[in-house]
Image (cartoon, rainbow, N blue to C red):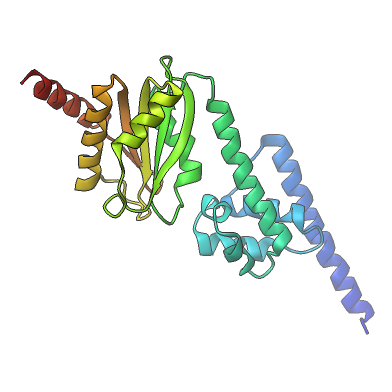
Length: 249
């Protein structure tokens, strides 16, 4: 049976938790997430699905286990459930937020001038690709105004272990009327430096595209908080010059 002293302590604890949650809500309404740490963002999200429990410990544990806010949001559903204090309802909510954010970024990009810098492409795809556990090779298909027509995951797995066929990519580009393409893939290791296979594949894809007058604007490799751009490092122009020389011979 709960004593009067225990009951009073319980009420004081509830008041502190409720007061903390109220302050989180007020900070968000005043300035969005600008002043929130990653842990506070996760905690805030968990409060929406767990109205009467202290969610600071599971928020801290989730961040410790998955490393970053993005890592938490993109973590597998089953892995989220392994954290004490995160039940199915909260795990579902976290996954929903992740999917909504990804769709928002895609919708915002459609019909607008898209390719003006490698940084814009990195910002567009970083959210969804940074924490993937395996390599995903994606193609962005653009029209003559450099507006995004479609982005599509073409292949999964390491480029040295999976066949990436230029013919299939070119057929897709022709079918949807793309004028140019940007290739993107991730390195789960976190190091975006291109491998010899990455360089070879990019050259082959660019040459195949040039034969059908489809431009390749860039190939971007996404790592952890950084990326490598073939265009920024002069490799796209180098491959174009090699192609032009080969054609003239």
